[in-house]
Every structure is written in structure tokens, then in C-alpha cells.
Image (cartoon, rainbow, N blue to C red; front, side, top):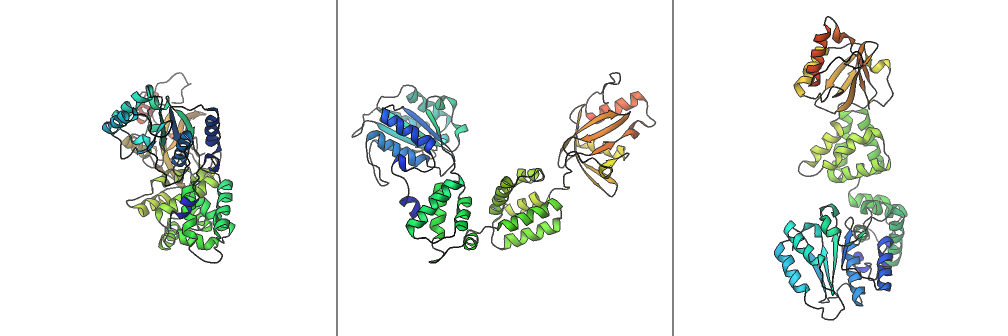
Length: 425
């Protein structure tokens, strides 16, 4: 049942393909003009119709009618993941020399072509360089960057994209109407979002949801059936994340996971929410969420949400509250030297926490770019991205010029010279 709708509504002609007109229009035009290339490369995310279009195009090239169960000897499908060795491609080359049986062309569809070995690609390149007139290759891949440039340069490249929300929603509404599935538009919206622009995934989800009720299917029913957190819960979790309250973060996270939401799913939903509601404060979190996967997915999610020491200070918010005139420089120097976080005579990397008049430096935690400079004969540590400012004029107290330069040279991991006042050091 899971694939029934997908099989039923899978297109059988190029003009029936939904959402990929940038590809199908050109292919249709080339067929009408009789301009057929010997090699095509279809690239794009999974579920966007690359293999389906390859099959349809192969049939239309030969004038065959296309049905899912059709089996023509002149159309050969190869799984690049299973037939990836040089021997497989050598065998292909030998058979390709044999003329087609019933069609004008012998068409080879190589799915997931990026899985071929280096040696197999070299063997494939030879036949692409001098192909028999009756042979056409249609290659498909989800990882175009893994396909050698030598292969790409000898093929016509077509890019498939994920369907936009409006197109997918209209398509699912039409399918639901034809199938007699009574479902709220908001519920279809959840399916579209979860399907991620993939027709295959979206239709499979609709097929799954169609069995929930013989009556009206609501948004709440879909969210519950798919094990998804409500948007309100995601918003609440991110709000608490910004507050830095680890106890609240842990409590909300525990409740969501105990309700049946998988940590990987929760991470995906948070990523989607952040992309739709971008805030600079979420960038560190967005960087860590893709790492939430087995093993220990729950632990990774907790670390991503609760592992940030401090909430970033917005750029330009330099106030007395985050400005310090002196602090324990010796302690700071020791930490920097120990962690080897000084990278040049101009840049110093560290993260910081300031509360109750106390400054704590974390060179080995969240790295923040800072610049050490001179203002009114004071050494000033300024956070470029985070807007904090620390005057460190006490550094030179009771020190000679040479001793000060030597100290900074030691801190910065390289020689710091006096250039007559122009150098910030």
C-alpha cells in the first residue's frame, strides 16, 4: 500500500511530469527536432524524478509507449551502486557494440552513476569519447560533485530541483480529490513540508495518511501519525535555547522525545524552523544539528541545544555592562598559551562569559574572532562579531617596552615588533 499512489500517479509521458519543466521542455523540443545527444547526465536530490524521466525519455527516443511494467531489450537499466566495477563497465562496452533489436537506439540508464569506481569511470569514458551511433547513455546521480569532470564534459547536463510548496500542494490536492481522500489543507501542508519537495516521498506519505480515517483527516492527526512535534513546541524550545536555561531545555526535550518524536526528526524540524525563521543567534545551533544521528542521537541533540555556554552579544552593543577596564591578565595569558589559540600577531581567538563583574575566557570552546589593538595608549580587546570590548592597559604596568613586546610575542605565538607606534602591539 505504501507505494500504491506513487505507482499510480507516476508519469508515463514527458508532458505529464510535474515540477521539472526546465528539463522536460528542452527534452521534448530536442525530440521534435531530432537532435539527440549520445550522453545525458541528470542531477538533483532524491525523489525529484530523474530515473522516471530517464525511462520516459528512453522510450520516447525509440518511439515505444511507456508503462511501468514495460520491458524492452533495447532499454537497459544499471544500478551504479551494484555494478560499479571495471569489469561491469567492460561488459557494458562489449554489449553496447551490438546493434539494437527493435528500436533505433540502445539506451543505457545508469542510476547513481557517482558510485562507479575510478577504474570503471575510466572505462566508461572511453565509450563516451567514441560512442557507437546507436548507443545513448542517460546517467542519473544525487551527488554530481562525485562524477569526474571528464564524464560531465561529455554529457548534456540537466538539473532537477525539489518541487516548491505551491506546486506540490496543488498536486497533492488533485490526487486527494481523485482518490476521494477528505483531508484539511493544513494537513496537506504538513505532508508537503515533511515530503521536502520530493514527489515520491510526498505521495508515499499521503498514501500512509489516507488510512487514518474514513472521514476528515486533520492536521493534528497527521502530526501525531508522523511523530512530528508541533510548531509551537519547536518555537518554545528555541526560545528557551536562547535563554540558556539548561534545566528548561532538558525538560522540554525530554517531553518531546517521550511523546514519540525521534531525535533525528526533531533535529530536522528545528533546522526547517530556523531556515524559515532565520536569526543570527541560531547559527551555532544550526551548525550542530546535522550531526544529530545514530549512535547516541539523543545525547547529540541535548549537547547541541544545551552545550552553548553563553548567549551571544549582538554586534554593536558595547555598553558598560560588557566592558571591563582590568582583569587577571596573567590567568588569561596562561590559558591562551596552554591552548595555543593565538594564531597571528593581529588575531586572537577565544570565547567569553561575563556576569557579575567577572570575565571568564574559554579558548577551547566556542571560538569568537577578536582583535587586539591600541586606543589612547591602552591595549583593547574587541570582539568583532560579538560587540564586547575589554581594555587591558594594566598589561604594561611595571613592565619595560621590551618586556611588553616579549610578552605579546609569547602570547601571539610569534614575534611582535615595535614599528614606531603604528603597530597595535
